[in-house]
Structure formats: structure tokens, C-alpha cells
Image (cartoon, rainbow, N blue to C red; front, side, top):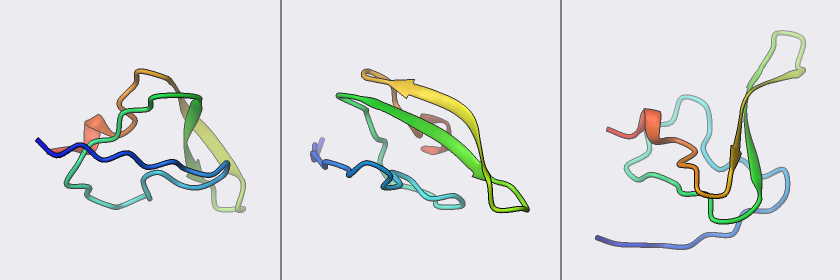
Length: 61
């Protein structure tokens, strides 16, 4: 198993919409939000993640 650590900046996307990652991301510290962009450009938050959550496990196959 290969383990890599990556630090994300505030506001940086961890996983982009429509991507099919070949890895899963475990949030070790902080808070992250899942969102979708609405037709008028606003963001709708659909989930919040805290340390210990896999932020994209549903998409990992």
C-alpha cells in the first residue's frame, strides 16, 4: 500500500466534480465540505467532513 500526504490550502478542491480518483482521501485534520455549483454560480453544501472521514470513499472503486 502506498501512502501519500498532501496538504491542501483553504479553498482548494480536494476532489473535482466528475473525476474518478484511483485513490481515496482520508481527512487527517480540519474540516472539509462537499458542494455542488448551482446554475447561478452559487455553491450548495451537500456534506461536511471532519478529521477521520474519507471524503471521497463513495466514488472510489
